[in-house]
Image (cartoon, rainbow, N blue to C red; front, side, top):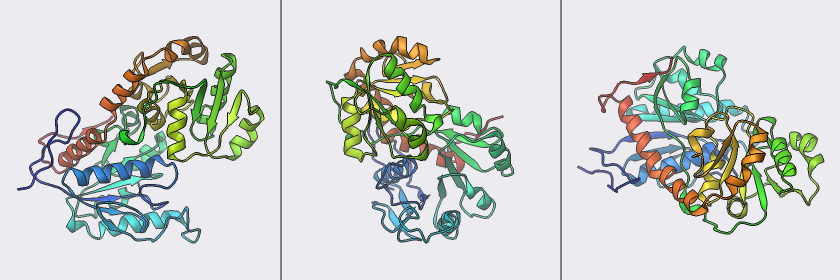
Length: 365
């Protein structure tokens, strides 16, 4: 009988037998993505981690995807590249259906919900159980609609998100991971603060600009242009104190993270995770964040950053954040955000759904 590789600490857990897993990715782009997208990035990391742990994985994704798993490609390219793939919802549905049609070949089907869990409609039709991971903070109305399938298992990405999945079958909470080898530690930062994230009202870019100006610190902004940027952010960009560096690839993102004194994250909405926080920490760069959503689940106060109730508190406390030991920030990131830890969490959740663990699922009420 084959078993998963065994390591100590944050390494792979031994399991009695490999699972047959259908991993259904979004078909917006290739897996891994060619541009920043947390859903596709997490899908790629989990797929490759499951294969490394000895499981038999079929990835349902675009034909341009690169994976050590078996690849089933319903579409050659993603709808971000091919404008004829419209409506996009039907493309996602066809990709999901391809896995369900082959359900007899799998122990479990895992659907990565790009926007919403359309997989629920197959919950009572599939021969293999379907678990779903959601990547946003759902509204009460969304959770109420999804509760038409109260038995369908969800895997939350944070305890914050789990509380929002009220009335649904949350079988586990498994935080995101990052590929730590791709994030380079930088011991000596330059003289700027960094905002890296989508230009939307909820991400808090205007608040980051306010904090930097009040502290007379240079702030770099990195993200693709949007209408929100052009209307609300660009008037504040002067090229000296507030600098827009545009959309960046992975290598440039790592360079920006590593050389920043701190990442500013004055988020205004209840984010279910905050991947940029973990990425910044992996480069040794502490974060200053507002206490919203899952921030306290990601940031260790006084170790990897500071969590503040208000912008005034962030301004007053930023000096303490800048004084944190950058080597300790990186070390904590390694302890908390390794891929093996995430893979082990998902495998445990799969086995729980399959009834192999002897534990009952927990429903959030």
